[in-house]
Length: 439
Image (cartoon, rainbow, N blue to C red; front, side):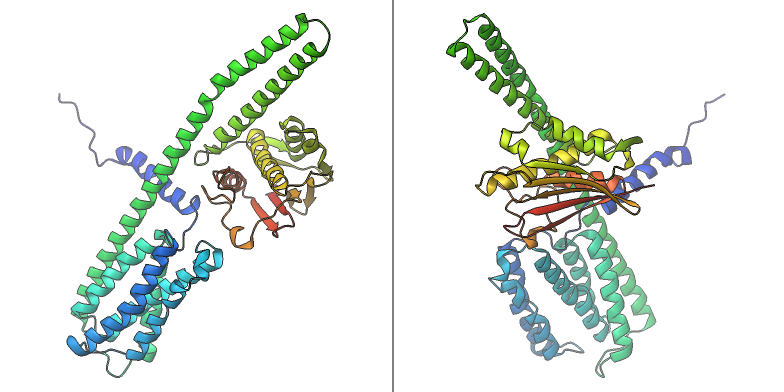
C-alpha cells in the first residue's frame, strides 16, 4: 500500500508559516518607531523642496500649454509649489530630525502627494496621464515615509480627495464611466499593494540589519571579558606581592595599584553586562517574576561601579512607597543602571564637582501606577531631542553614546505595558519617570 504524502496545502503545514508571518507583521507594527520622513538629511530635504518648487509650475505649464489636460488650476499649482518653501528654509533645516520639523514635513508630503494628486486624478476623469501619475505618487510616498504611515496616508488622502470632489467638483472636471473606474481601481490597487509590499520588505531588511549589528556588538562586548580576566589576575598578583613586601610606602603603592586595577575590571565588566543587555534590544523574552521596585533600585545603587567617591555621595535615594510588579529583576536593574549612567555622564558634562543631591532616585506609588523617578542636575536635553532619545542608535553624546540604552529602557517598559517619560531643560538637568501599571 503506498504511503500517503502530506500535501503542502494542509493546515498543519501552513500554520507555522502563518504564525511566523503574523509575528513579523505584529513586530513591525508594535516594536519599531515610526519615521514620518525617511532619511531626513538637510540636503535630501532641500532637493525635495527644490523639486517641488520648480516641478509643480513646470508640469502645470506642460499640462496647460504643451500637452493640455481636461482640467488644470494654475492657482492650485502655485499653492502646492509653495509647500516646498519650508524644505528650503535654511534655519529650519539645521535640525531636520526635530519633532516639529518632522511633523511639518510629513504633513506637507501628505497634502501634496496622496491628497493633491488624488484630487487632480478625479478632476481629470482618471485619464492615462493622471492614472500613471497617481500610481507613481503612491510608490514615491511609500519611499518617503514609513510604510505604515504611507498606507494610512494614502487611504486618508485619497478618501478625503474623493469626498471633496463629490462636494466641490469643478465645472470643467472630466467624467469617468463605470468601466474606466473599475479598470483604474485595479491599477491603483496593484500600485498600492506593490508599494506596501516593497515598504514592508525594506522595513524588515532594516530590522534584520539592526538585529545583526546588535548581535555583533554583544559578541564584541563578550569577547572583552578575556583581557579583563587577565587584568584581574594581574591585580591578584600585585596584592600577593604587596602581602610579601615589607611594610612601608612600596607596600601601600602596590595595594593601591591592585585596588585601582580591580575597580577598573569591575567597572568594565559592569559596562559589558549593560552592552550585552542593550544588544538584546529586539529579543526581550517574557518574564513572570514578582519584582520589588525598592529592591531593584537598592541593588543598582549598591553595586554600581562609581568612578569616584564623589559620584557615590552625590546620589540620594528616597523609598517613599515600595510596589511590586511582574517582570524581570535583571531587566529592570539594567534599566535603572542605564538611567544612572546617563545621569552621571550629564553631571560630569557640566564640568563641576557633583554635590550631594545632584542625583536623586525616588520610588513611589500614585493610584494604580508605580513610579521610579531619576532626577539629575546635569546639562539637560534640548526640547527638540526629547522625543527622539528613545529611538535605537540616536544619541545626544556622539562621542561616547551609541543610542541603545534608552531604546532598551523603552522596550523593557513596553513589555510591562508601562512607559518612560522625560522632562528637561538645557542647563537645568533632566527627570526620567518610569510609570509601571500595578495589577
